[in-house]
Image (tube, rainbow, N blue to C red; front, side, top):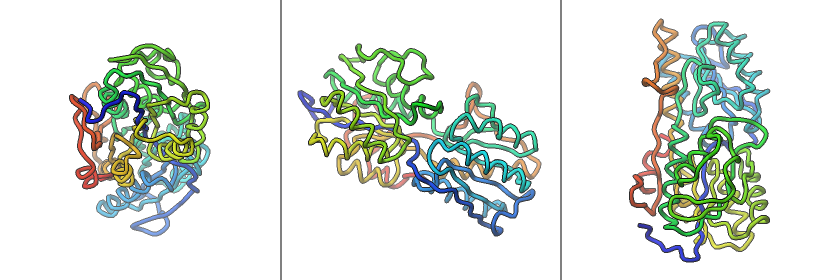
Length: 360
């Protein structure tokens, strides 16, 4: 049972994860100068280099590269969805003769460049964002984003206790397709008990109907590009359509912080809105303590990067690429629901525990 009652309350649900914006392309090397490449080189290509999620990933890759005697070169898009910059960075890795590439694919537009890299002999491992189709890369280490979305959906359903859910969905894109985007969004709806139409498409479910316990209305599906400013703009647009929103799902925590700004500017008490998200960064632990975010699914980018580097080092030494468990197309690096308001039937940890392992 919920520890707070929701007669006329609305509490923020802001979900998800995936990237903030405005990362300028960066090339930094560790363990051997500015990316000497050759058989000892590995490139890490992220969506941005300003989002703390990807900073943690760089830290994990840096340590693992040093431990395995590899030169690491890092680069990033200018913003989430910047496929052109990622393609150029893939081409640079091919030209250097790197052993492998670790990449968080911006969109499916990078797939042909990944194929070119693999055809040239590089091992390509995706991190965080499985490509579509999954066999575009040799292997993916990632959070189970469907599970991450389902966890916050189940938590929200339990907290509502049958009250009508008036929902804002703050997604990643509305003009590009990314698996991380639809898996989190659709997983959230499935966790709520809302029927989805195409499970790999955002926004085609019925706008009204019933979730497991009561009625629902989906007010909006708005893109945020995983960034705080766009998160605020998206939430403002949703509130202009219906000021009675009591559930907010966001793709990641930066977009959640932007949504929080919009709610405050509109004079809406956060105690009246369930806000959930995905990422579980250390900053988000404070946001939960301060009742900005109510629950988030925590993922582990540092682990993803470490395992990715270790796999490339293994292949460079003549070994085989690790294989996912039977029936899966990626290796999960785990996910935990973090909240200070646990719900019956939904396994979770609190922020005290979450701070110990945030982005470990």
